[in-house]
Amino acid sequence: MIDAVSLRGVEYKWNGRDAFALSVGALQIPRNERLLLLGPSGSGKSTLLSLLTGVVVAQAGSLEILGQRLDALGSSGRDRFRAEHFGIIFQMFNLLPYGTVIDNVLLPLSFAPARRTRATAAGGAEGEARRLLSALGLPADIGRRRATTLSVGQQQRVATARALIGSPEIIVADEPTSALDDDRQQDFLDLLLGQIDATKATLIMVSHDRRLARHFTKVVELTDILATSQREAAAT
Ligand SMILES: Nc1ncnc2c1ncn2[C@@H]1O[C@H](COP(=O)(O)OP(=O)(O)OP(=O)(O)O)[C@@H](O)[C@H]1O
Image (cartoon, rainbow, N blue to C red; front, top):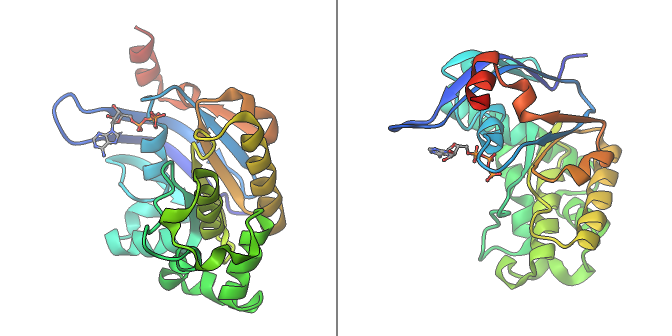
């Protein structure tokens, strides 16, 4: 089976003086993996996610997602590829503040025809949005509320339903539990992992919190996958 992620010798440097550079030797993520990527703040975890999702393109090396080389696509091709194959739960959730909860959950389907087809086949796009919201523990009447009126925990679940709708192959989550206390973190992870199991998606979650490790099939320390040159520089 084609891997979810196949990365080799990737180098990326942000623009600017003294800009941060990331140099990753190799990272292979099979389909259906639940991977936790650990690293301290500022170590480059979000930068790596931006590379994997094609928000930015590496200056060197090769990166394939589901067998597709991202550098072979232009910027709008990468946007389409991201919308179709990734569900992304952002650190700050990035909900449309004045949209309703249902608008927010349905949003990715506007840019992802295959996800729309799957959601429609599963019981209509809006029905599927409501099913996911309820599976994530939200009350039945939440669909018409504005995103701005929700608690942080509710916003996070809406962002999760938006990532899951239409069953994209890869779910990426950037520190999604950092705003929650321990009990809520546990509840949230149980719900997310239950949904991931149901759709057989690959999960890539980024965190600095190694206590989350037991929920995952694989744990990778960012420092362990850095290219040798960058590891040596970081150690000095
Ligand atoms: N859009 C950007 N433009 C320029 N530099 C950036 C940009 N995003 C991140 N960086 C730089 O890249 C470095 C790594 O940041 P990154 O956000 O990838 O780390 P992180 O491990 O995800 O940190 P955190 O856990 O705090 O989110 C930092 O020095 C940061 O300033």
